[in-house]
Image 1: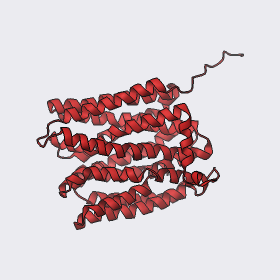
Image 2: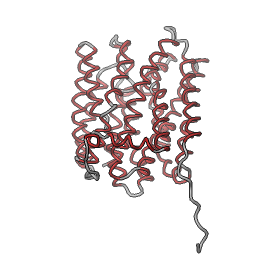
Image 3: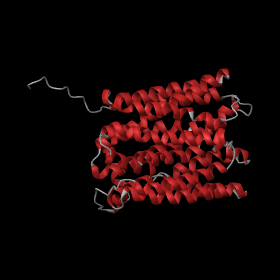
Image 4: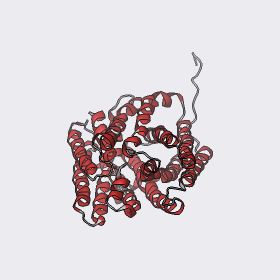
Length: 396
C-alpha cells in the first residue's frame, strides 16, 4: 500500500509540472512562467514544518496525509479550471499557491510513515519510494505521448483526480501516531527543527541543500522548453527519461548506502550534477538534442543519490520525536526556499542570456553547472560525517 500511495503521489506532479511552461505559453501566458514557479515554493516555506510538527505532536501522519491530499485535489482542479475558463492568470497563481501550501508536507509525511514501519528501513525505503518515480514516469508518458496534453490544462485536471485517489488510499496506510510532545508555540509551529542548524553537519547539509536547490529549479522550468528549441515535439514525455534512470538508482540505493558513507554518496550526486548541466551546455553549443537528453537522464541519478540519501541521513541523526519536523525542514529547504530563489534567478538568467532565436542556452546551463560545482567544494571541505568504526578482531 505504501508503494501504491507513493505511485499516485508521484504521478500527480508528473502530469503537469514538466508541461506547465508549455501549457502557460500555449495560453499566451509565457510571461507568467517565472511567477508560476515562484509561488509554489513560496507557499512551501512554512507548511512542511507545521505539517511535520503536527505529525510529531498531535495528528497521526497517515490521517494528516489523507486530509491534505483531498484539499490539494480540489485546489489543483480549480486552478487549471481557471485556465480553461480564460480567467485572469492571477486566479491560477492564487489557487496553485493554495495547492502548494497543503501539498508541502506530503513527501515528508510519507517518508516518516515509511521509515517508521518498514523493517530495515534504509534498505527498503528506496524500494518503496521508487513507486513515486514510476508514477511520475507514467504521468509524463500519458501527458506527452498517450493523450497529447503537452499544452493542455487537462493535464492538471487529470493530476487532481489522481491526487484525490492517493488521499483515499491513504486511509489504508499504517497508523503512525505522534511520538513527541507539544510545548511552546515554537514547538507547535515546527520551529524546533531549526535547532538542528546548531550542529555542524546538519548545518552544512541544509546549507548546501539550499544552494543546490537553486540551480535545480531550471530543470522543469526550462528543460522542456529547451527540448522544443532543439526540435522535440513531445518534451513532457521525453523528460520522463530522468525518472527511468531514477528507478534504477533507487533499486541500487540499499546496496550503495551499505557500502559507502553518506558523505561519499552525496558528493557523487553533486559531482554528477555538474556533469549533467554541462551536457545541456554542450547541447546549446552544437544543437545536438542527444546531449540534453543524456543530461536529463543523469538528472534522475543525481536527484536520487542526493535527496533520498538526505531523507535517510535525517532518519539516522534525529530523535524520534523530531523526525517529522526534520523531514519537513528538508522539504522547506529543497522545495521552498531553494526553488523560490531559483525560480527568480533562473528566470532572470534566461531573460538576460537566451535570445528569441534560441541562442544563449550554452551560457545559461554552464553557469548553473558552475553553481553546483561550488556546492560540491563547500560540502567536501565542511562536512565531516560520522567516522566508520572498524570491526574488532575476533575474541576482542
